[in-house]
Length: 556
Image (cartoon, rainbow, N blue to C red; front, side, top):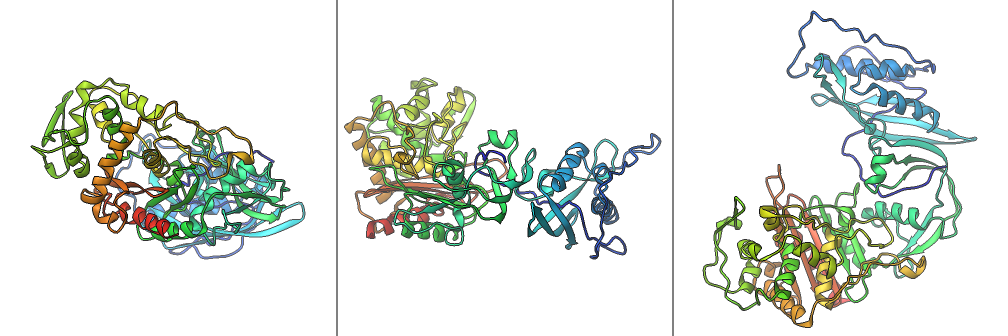
């Protein structure tokens, strides 16, 4: 039935429901529950509008929200798809998805129970049955839609998105029930234990990715399921098809991963202490991924996030400066309170400054302008070249076993180039990328991270075109170890060996009161990185998460 595609970003919009039989009560102050059996005929709704009436503006009244919701749900429950679509802001997309819900997804017997409205948002729960070739299974989930005022005529309408139908749908996706295109898999950790979402809640997207990549190769047999089939936009964003309901089990093939059950369990526990936290731990000498976890389970930020890494990027910037001979750790180098570049004025955190000090001191204090003031001595492409050639980043060629975002360091000029030196501007990374950066410093050469051994499917893993010199590696270790012992990472890294190195980061994001907090470190044959979105300074937020995993690794 359809080919499974790429891994999964859930839209944060709630879904709504459709189908053959919908039970909603229309009347009184709200909707109660009763069974209605709609026919399949589509009903046309009048699209006429008066040219005399002024366009209404302003907030919606409770009556407008209730009436629009009632019309939408009543039409829907009766199978009058066109009429339901007429009270949305995208009637064509609504008709297509509501029709496919019954025809392609084989969902019948739908019952909707409205919850308590909050302003313009109308929540409801869904109970239904999925039937395919004599096999049936119940389906239930929560859904919601929002009523908005249409700007063209001021009328209240349902703000339509595919997620109104089911929360895992992105616009352009569809629901299909049938024989799955890809057999299921049984994923194992490095010790042979089975990986499940019940045991490791973060790994749902990882399991989806493993199934897509290895399902057919692992020797399994497909079953029958209701699944999300991704559209063109989702496929471009590397989102995978997703199984929502299994009607009959297939025979799974077996895929062994590099995950450590002890470290994975610890990573799950650590990210649960922070909202929107993500972490990756790997083995620098081999590239094996030992743990990956996200406190939010809908999208794998740890592998696929695309976020400004803030001052953790200064590791790569420093590599470039050391290789070019522009600075050494102990060389005197001021960090002014402000620095002007191409019309922009850059500030340090809390408007701090270091008038007299070494580059190592500025690295440890994460003083921005000690890096940005090198911009006039650099070419626009220097940072991009360093990231690609030494750290293997931004080439879009990592093959770890599941979909990943492999970092981006675009060539930029002027003030944007200066911002890139401190991990802002157009630079984008995720914890997997930044764990790999620390791992590369630890070993002196890039080892592409992987979750499934390349020998399983004979895939080619990415390589960097060159390695840093031993002198540069020693200089990087010196500044990172100083940061771990005396700088912004000292509190989190307390208790770890003096041979361990770290770097903190804070990345400003438009619309956020607090920056994203980053932390990356190496210790022994372990490297890890984490981010806490809108958490604040990395040493206080992501730092404890990363350090806890490194301490556990040191004890194993």
